Length: 254
Ligand SMILES: C[S@@+](CC[C@H](N)C(=O)[O-])C[C@H]1O[C@@H](n2cnc3c(N)ncnc32)[C@H](O)[C@@H]1O
Image (cartoon, rainbow, N blue to C red; front, side, top):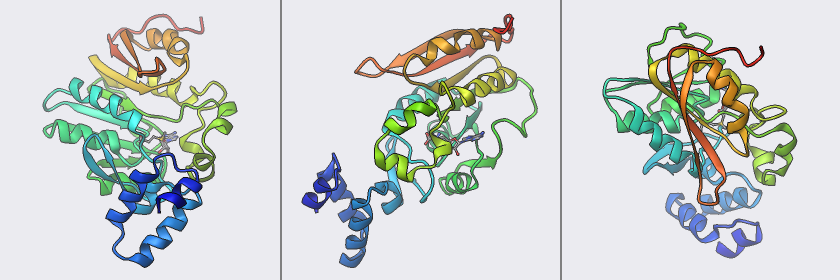
């Protein structure tokens, strides 16, 4: 198995072989799964599950596979959600971040939103209260949320072709492509969070490259003050947390 997975280009062949072996109920299933993995199909779609922040999460075929890098955002968000607080996870996908928040703060109200019905069904199977919508479309613009999280599509269109071939072949383009500079949806999320967060509430978004700089004027104009980006061990930007002040600054367009 390991040899076949290595030949198919899997970088973590031994771990993947262990996972397939543990999940398959018989040899025939194992062979079919191995063949699917050899074509590059995501492992989580084949086994139907992955580990995220220490819990098993269901991942349905066709739904974006939550990344280990997003655990940092989930963990940071978990520390910012008060007991009995209210959190909104925009672009929830399989509901990984929302599910972590509910586990971490069981008394909180956590809602996930995704535009893709398949993702919403998957999030619900993971125990998340999830709605199908275009971002905050159905929500009243009242500043009563404590936390807004979003791992939205943020890859610039021109860089989608640089993603691993299997990701491009299998995962939904709408989950990856963030428009010309990658921030089309993230900008809308910042504006939405400015309408929804109470003063003192937090927005956490996943980002890459130098996207934090591009967002700074919009954050100020949308009523955010303190902003803390974070980086991984390679010093690559991974996201930012920004705190709502409740008083929007001047428009960045003026
Ligand atoms: C990069 S995936 C992240 C999913 C999840 N947050 C995670 O970390 O696993 C982005 C998700 O955004 C959703 N999405 C794209 N455009 C959207 C929109 N306008 N409104 C709501 N969700 C959207 C996609 O369907 C996809 O599930």
